[in-house]
Amino acid sequence: MHAHETTAATAGSPVGSARDWWEQRYAERDGIWSGRVNAVLADVAAALAVGRALDLGCGEGGDVVWLAEQGWDALGIDLSVTAIERGSRASVSAGVDERTAFVAADLARWETAARFDLVTASYLQSWPVEIPRAEILRRASGFVAVGGHLLVTAHAAPPHDDLPAEMQEYRFPTPDEDLAALQLDDAWEVVAAELRPRTATTPEGDPHEVLDSVVLVRRTR
Ligand SMILES: C[S@@+](CC[C@H](N)C(=O)[O-])C[C@H]1O[C@@H](n2cnc3c(N)ncnc32)[C@H](O)[C@@H]1O
Image (cartoon, rainbow, N blue to C red; front, side, top):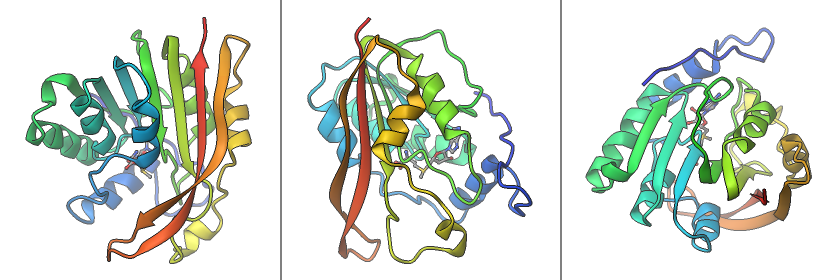
């Protein structure tokens, strides 16, 4: 397990590196995400044959654990050591740790010789410290096996009304922008590049509408 430093892309930002910012965020409380699988991933993966999966920016491992429960061998990568430790513990609790691995690393630099049947990124978005997201996604397309899929799910609009000031500046990606960022050649087919509305639940249990950008592509050769 190794971790790297990410340089803050926000000039003059007082918050330091993206890794520091995310560590701070995870340290605020035990478990900042629900631990449940993201709906788009569950929907997409249900239609695929199980194999090897890679989760980019896996956070506390909800998607990795779910994938392993469905029979996938799943590897999660995240900048935050705290998040990675939580993911590892969650996979032990779920009894799927033999099919999961978690690595703390910066995806802008992380390398692997492995190829995956599914590479997924759920809300790999960072504010107020930006990350080289387009570059990370473009590099990640190189980790997809022939016949495999790359799924990029992103908030296409603010996920809740109560936006902190630093988030007001954040530009949410469109499906076309995320697809263009991948710079795919003709070895790929586009399965979907679309906006999908979804009903989410606030921590208080209230339902509200959110909008996801979903890009699903398949490497054909
Ligand atoms: C909005 S959270 C999403 C977490 C998880 N995918 C989920 O859906 O619950 C974004 C995650 O990306 C991670 N992240 C941000 N930049 C990263 C980078 N350069 N390399 C690896 N992980 C990164 C953060 O630490 C954070 O856990």
